[in-house]
Length: 96
Image 1 (tube, one colour):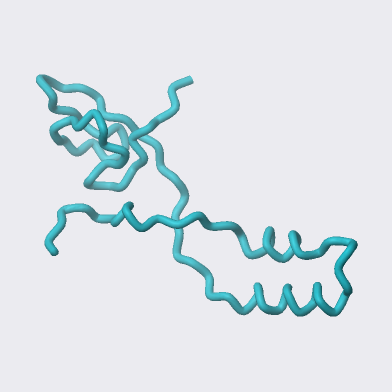
Image 2 (cartoon, rainbow, N blue to C red):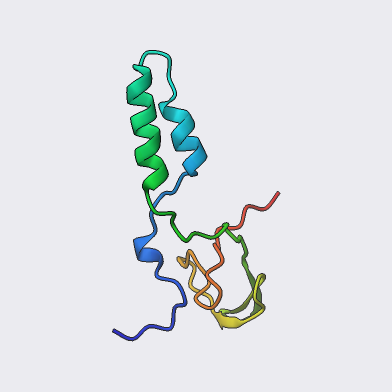
């Protein structure tokens, strides 16, 4: 199936750090041998290839056409678009 998206955001999963997972199993009510075994299992899980979230927004240029504030590439603005189809930036930018 052909697509012009660089990233398939329909299959994004939640990720946590290995260190956070190992720290989470170190609770006082578990036997020390169980804690060691769980930490070993977590340490052997392959690392995921993930990137930090880049937030952006479409800067309106004219009549439904906009420029991504991250990659400066233009596209027709889809009000329901969650990500830039060129760079993958999260288009739900939080404006402070």
